[in-house]
Image 1 (spheres, rainbow, N blue to C red):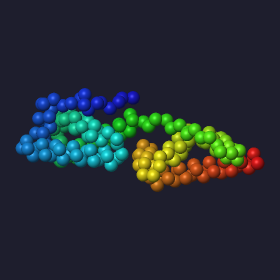
Image 2: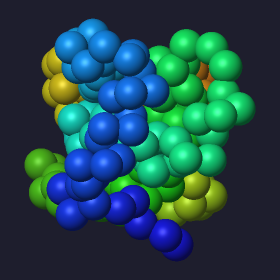
Image 3: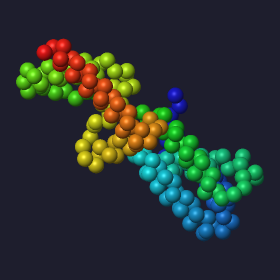
Image 4: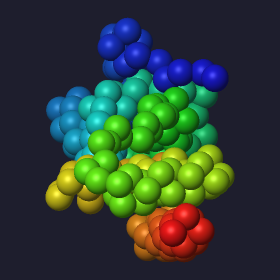
Length: 190
């Protein structure tokens, strides 16, 4: 799988920057102001989508547009800022593919007593019965605390390409199945 280029390593040369600024506006001062506005807007777009590397992705977007400019400059009509947003959308999707979260491990836990140990053993068996994707989802869903939990769930929903409500419903359904499975397991052992 291809990784995203390093924007620091792939900086624009002076000719590419000059061409980009001329495309944005014939007046170099106005072009500089527009360039900075577009960059801030791109950073905000990436931040709103939960990217931890918003500035790097914004720079990568600008670099990619500048490199593509010789091909599109004569035929593109409309606001250049919209073109940047389209490229940013593609770069964000690429970043999701290349920046996969690490595999989630179940936390180690020491049961307090025999009953709790039995409940924990049943829950572990039930979790193992889940499909891998469901197991990873439910474990990831219940990570973090307080506000970090909210941010984590937003990122998780975005990575899965679903809305927060859809994520909540999926997690709830998996949790209900785990609950029923654990109750059955405890009933069979009791």
